[in-house]
Image (cartoon, rainbow, N blue to C red; front, side, top):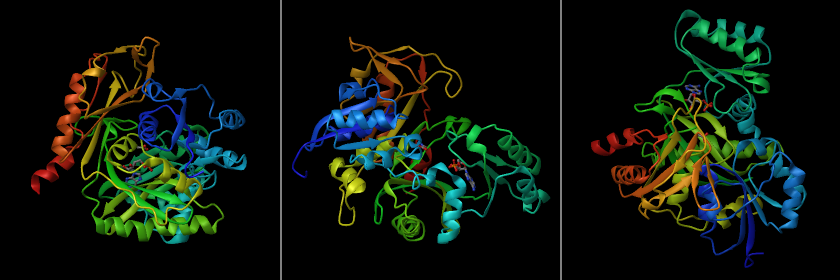
Length: 435
Ligand code: AMP
Ligand code: GLY
């Protein structure tokens, strides 16, 4: 298969998947690219098809009909639902972990227990399936005396909403009651109570083949909707890579104390982790500690990673899916990449759909606009159909340069019904100034 062209299917419809598709179409190994369901940007690169990712049999049938060689699973839900296992069982290579390995994202309790077993640095915790025991545990913690905040987390996938940072015991008790009362549905069948960690957060991405991990890159994102990290949480309003705070020494420490023991433990459990592993780290005074794992590329972090990756992405995806990353090296641009998310006015609350976006052609060729929630009409008109809509993604020699280019791109786009944060990367810009 090495010299043959591959037909590839990318599953998902966000900026992450547009960035993956954008990188895949640059590969000389690509035969035909399909995206399901795709978006208005992916429509210009690939054939978008209407496939229900939850219908594994339909995905398998499509792959057999179209002779798909590799399926790249973008979002977490199909991974947690076991799509990678079902594709593999049908003889189709899939990028992304199987159902049990995806529990590293799908169940916070699973991950905490795994960390405890492997002695991985992370916040102290308790895991509970009933309110009575969780409330009794809270009473034993410093927060019961009004000292130190505590974190209460719904166990399962809650679209980033299942984490409550409680500053006082009453808020923590309410969070426990709300979760077991069904505030997060099935995701709240169990919960985790965690010690509050202090420090700066950074994301670290590694490519895994079940046994070995190849470090990819570091990044930081901005989760709050407003400038200065204010307002409600979102899926992410912008990101940059690398995160200079993640020094080589910290990367090495995270590899040896967090990533390597995770892979060893998952392999021992009979669920080797293949795919990209996204570690959310807290850089504490005692070294990096794991906040959470995600079983996929981050969105919008993937967009900056794809702009920095020089090497062909397809062999890397295949190595993780069906080969080995052991002797693999990847080349990266020695640049900073930044993405600014343009969202529909009102996001993350309710927003209008169907507004028209103009001016995309006016963006400089050096800046890539990845689409997230867009649709493309036959005549080429692009409309906004989601909350996060565009990811204006630039590169520069410095953070300041990347930021200036990204915002020049934003300003070229004519979309009055959209907005963005104007301060993406501000911490990194401050650090750069102090260097
Ligand atoms: P998670 O979904 O687990 O990443 O949590 C969402 C956010 O909550 C993280 O990005 C952190 O900012 C914060 N968080 C989660 N757990 C902790 C913790 N134990 N200590 C401090 N902050 C936390
Ligand atoms: N940007 C955060 C995430 O993808 O989970």
